[in-house]
Length: 280
Image (cartoon, rainbow, N blue to C red):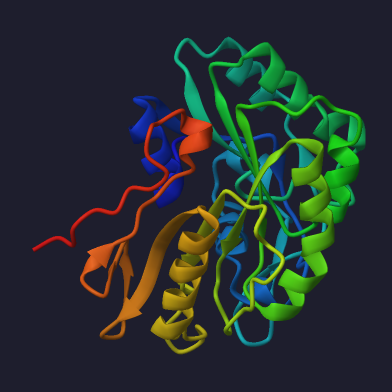
């Protein structure tokens, strides 16, 4: 079950490793307004309608359709411990996007189950684990008293100012405890003042990718401000996607250049940032 998330794939490529998801959870619930066009809910909704009994058992009933046709999670979360066993036994070092279709810090995930991620990171230091959450305060509880692992990076997703302001204290505590941290600002919905976020190692920015009639627009000036902020604090900046000419473009150019930086402190590379020329 590979992942097509660009920044996971590019991390793996930089390391000469494989990219994959760690499928330990299914189901979630909206955390804030950034979740309005959740891609994971759409995926779960489609899979929950299939006739394959294994797929149906995993995804069936996790979503519902709203009056305007959107798929939303119902709040049920299913634990899938087999994902841990597969990663523990993997023959090749892998970059894992942990619980890519859910949230490890969801309130319905038992702390003991979530903490198995830390145990996995310790047992397999050759793997790289990317934790992404919209619930950083609870993730801080998950990681409380755990020894920070160099092969783990913790990202929160914040697409608007209120989320960034709410999430910063917990993310700062995680960074102070020794965890490598970053922000995935997807879907980006408004300009964000990142003052106080100087502790992060990675800033990812991306436009919303839902149906064209519904998706909320991302202004290129917001992206430029993110790029400049990351440069000031020495963080890697990654521009995942943008709307150009009415289409969502993956790894787009900004002012004539792609920005595909990954956190080199984590990767062990010599340079703090990689900026590739725009295609063509």
